[in-house]
Image (cartoon, rainbow, N blue to C red):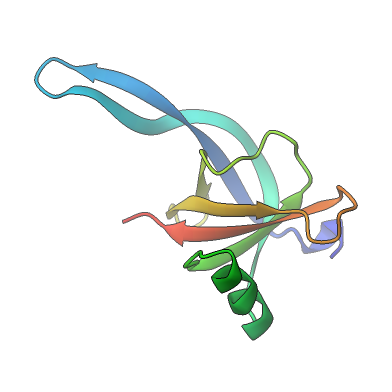
Length: 108
């Protein structure tokens, strides 16, 4: 993976809690954490087996530069398609703190 292959732009959304008088607290994902370049990868059989071992049912895989603040509590929005994904897992596959592989599940 090289920096030139990061051809997608994604925004990470942080959960915010809003109060509703009728139902109590509701969690929205409207606060932008950061917008970064990324690359949506085609999932291979190896990736699917790895995800199954982690008990995750991903619909997409995203590669971004390493960031220590990315967790599974965030959401990802693809700026091109405006689809929103929940982060199922954050994996530093090589262990070199250069790239992160994010398994994503689409939020409907």
